[in-house]
Length: 484
Image (cartoon, rainbow, N blue to C red; front, side):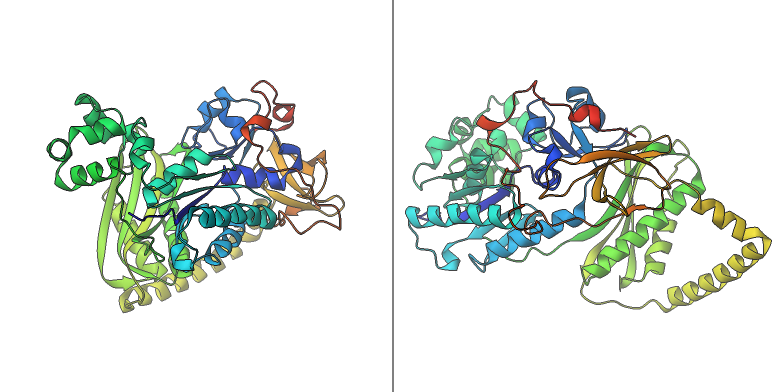
């Protein structure tokens, strides 16, 4: 444990939802939910205005709609979130060489390694300046926790939300932690909490009073001893600059259960290709291919195959995923599919047999395509082009006449677009046919710095709790947002 609160934990406030509010002036101060917008979607992030109604992350979107029907339900835009995250991480790296990212919107920073004096006043000043710099660079807010240990810094940032800073002075840990629920401690999930509850342990203070021996008896040596130390406020985990990924994977949840075996196989192959793209983008290869299948009854199966050596060859990973799928019964219907690669390495071992198979497959595909074209493939291709495009809520679009905007909703052959930018006033809404040639997908606009001189809005993306609208004051956003 450090004698000064030199470990900083930053957690951006309602990150995805706040970024959407900053990008869309008409949604500022209104409830916003980002995640899967379909019947089987899951909430990724809810704005503080939506949380007033009980909407939470990981909640089924259908349940969120019942709790907060007037919210704007938007599909995530990870391109924007990654851009903002890169800006924030650069600010953190300017403070110290030891930055441990946990996700796009969360990280630990070792201020002592950055030369910040080990004094409460000095680290508090750094934390306050960081919050101002983040707001200036991104238009968003973040909460900062400062303490002598990682666990305590994370607890402090949670207490600081939204848009605040909390310092836990060394020596006050047990007094602070005592009344908190045992779920506050890292590593205590529902199963562990239930085990402790049956033993009459509900708070952190009761966990410490139970003693190490009792916790080891209940939870095992490693978990019990670690939990006892944390209940005393002891956490000597260092800030680690590089966190090596153990696996790379992708998955999709389907709005309607897949029962056609050919469709299931094509989806697995598509996911395998996406997984390879992520693998190559990370400059990695992998030795073990894994598929994940969630059935109609929510039962989940995983199958894996270890290859002769690490690879990033799409043909090898596709073939392995297809072989694994053959071992799974999907006749009852498939709700979710996933493909992943583990056993990561920084090099590849080429599979010559797969390479030959790829060449043969390419030749066969070319031959089949030529035959199909001769038999009327041109007509089929034209029919596909006439198929309506899908416009997801929240998608960036550009219209030849009206400029940049975003999709509010679509259905029955129409798409509704609100034309506004991060630095404009709330924009007007217009409706077009989904195949309108003047309308096309766009790229995310910068949240700050893109406005004409004097045109940047000064309204915060997230309001503090005391400035947030009352639960019943949701405006008319729900009436404006079309739902697919």
